Length: 189
Length: 95
Image (cartoon, rainbow over the protein chains, first blue to last red):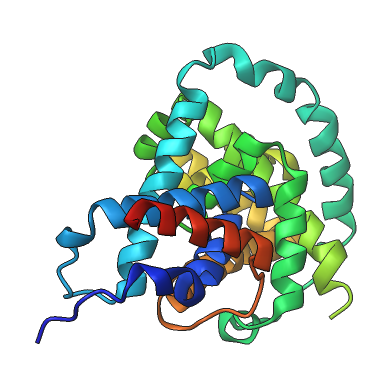
């Protein structure tokens, strides 16, 4: 039994919220995320004959969205000179010195099962806020690695960075997000 | 014995340890790097905690991605005006 696609007039009501939630975990800026959702639907319209029906409709849309996100990032960084990392790196030492101090105090304990947080709106709101505070490339490196499970080699190509650059970005992102979530979520739990 | 170990593996800072933890999530660490990190973690409860948190966050995000494939989310919602705009664009394409 092959599923066929629902009619394009229904797509927005059926899937726009979920696609938007997905996009915001990688690109935490509403305007850009909205554009990506629109492009996803338009691309779906173009290739709707290729929908095979062996995956769910939503899986198919999310697959298109993931391609759109990678394309968007690739073109955003294609022209960027490799040295564009330098300004961010200047502050990194003082940033980590502060972190060093907090770690010595107490990083806090996070007792959570992923299942408990998946449906918690407030948690994801805090997460998106924290992600937004990172420089955009830092946030993108984090989400491509942690959520998208993209390997380092692919991420380097998409963000136009060397592996060493990438590992600085993910290091900074993980430590800073951890800190932000500790303060804005786990301390109050 | 412990002194000899300390000479071979000088204690690294929490900053350096956090870098190794993070890189260990992105690539395979060398034996030497792994030893340095392990020695640090033996002495530093705070960093053990942080490593658990970083891995927990990764597990959570991967679970969230899979969750979105099967369940519908109530948050965040795309605004009605944004939805209407996209609907119009789609309508214009299908004519």
